[in-house]
Length: 519
Ligand code: FAD
Ligand code: DLZ
Ligand code: SF4
Image (cartoon, rainbow, N blue to C red; front, side, top):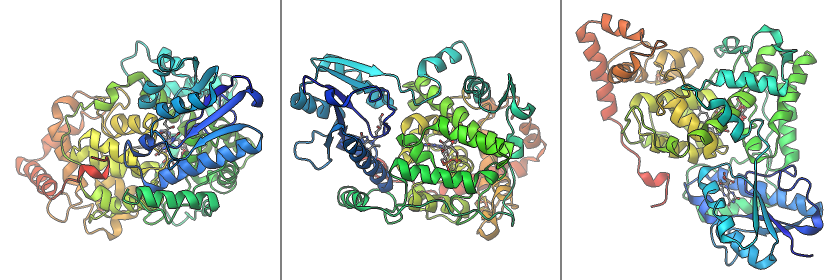
């Protein structure tokens, strides 16, 4: 081979349709894949997350090789592994003497900063290509955002509907409304009987990786025994087929429902595969639309699913790149409390929190409303420091990459950006959780008790939050009215709320920082 082009493929870029692979010829290309210590340890990822990424990477390398590509695959325990992407590209440059390096931009700021140094480091042309697996490029989001004070997903989403033509009736939204979220708030009930999602037995390659993870990362958070994620495109497609055949119909109505011990409900459980590159989000949306057009799923379910993908997912990615690096350190509410230890152990009497943390530990997954209205709501109300909450979410979910985790955590749940993303904080008392779940029935706390030792902690914490952020939130027209309710309570009642909240907060033990990061 004459001097080849070196194509580094990162762990979340696992598709042959990647801009750096597509259109290249096999006889002048070396694809480089790297398991590196830096990525595996910049936070102490859930064991399943590391196993998933390494297994999917190894399977993808095998597929490429079978198709005739030359793949230079560096394993974590290979002798001489430098531990970093840049170090491994440097070693690969020595091995292959490439005429050029073609790489697709990284998903995360940290890695992109390193890649942008490559042109100065390596004595060959370095081309950094846009990641066109997203519907909106980073530049397109920037253009949309420029000059705005607030950045509501809803308006961006409409642009994406027009751009893709999804659920459009010429230039109008199918059915007359853009967003059918109001129809998607059913409480759990006896009608619910979600079929089991597709689960995959680990094959030999995954078992090897699981052993590696046990050996090197055995003290990280989370179970490994329950690993059943799709690790190849075929498996991911099978999981998607099952979702479209069995679950999408009720995806919409029960999108916000929560049931103790039922971890998937009607959610697609496809985020890990989409984020790795095993599934194409636009293709999934087209399949969802087809289910609607064929009369197999109602519009509210299909619109809801499509909105998550071309609305929220695209939007948070654009938001991330628009506001980085500042987003990482935003703390508009000056939240300073340490993350409670129970986020790692699950040892709390709050049944909702305990169940969401159990699912997180067992599956490296919790569904959206658990992440938002239980785990996130608690962190918001209790005033947990954003950096610690960000680290937790980045560690514990198998689908967590900073570009998607950070806007959801800093801006959506913690309001740390001061309202650029959300028009108001997603703060809620125990009432909301009681309405949307069966958690409260057997909880040691009572959602109807407002104060005192047996009151659901979300109740006093809600008012404690509102009271301590009055100056900022009173001016917000979507939330300001709540203060007239507060002011109508007599002084003793208000004090009771504040004292109950304080008493509860005093019981929290802060977690050791070493759960999330190596010292
Ligand atoms: P479904 O409910 O079936 O939704 C379909 C798809 O829509 C998902 O697979 C996902 O790709 C996309 N989606 C839905 N909501 C969002 C959203 N808010 N932002 C971006 N994409 C969305 N998702 C991640 O992929 N990685 C994360 O690290 C992550 N962190 C989150 C942190 C918090 C605090 C919150 C509130 C949400 C977070 N989400 C994250 C979004 C969402 O919770 C997950 O995408 C979803 O639970 C994945 O399960 P699913 O595939 O069954 O999703
Ligand atoms: C998350 C992760 C982990 C744990 N390990 C690796 C790895 O060893 N090699 C790799 O290519 N990618 C890994 N990843 C995913 C990267 O962090 C991901 O590609 C970044 O988001 C890129 O910005
Ligand atoms: Fe959660 Fe409160 Fe309900 Fe208990 S009573 S499950 S703490 S919302």
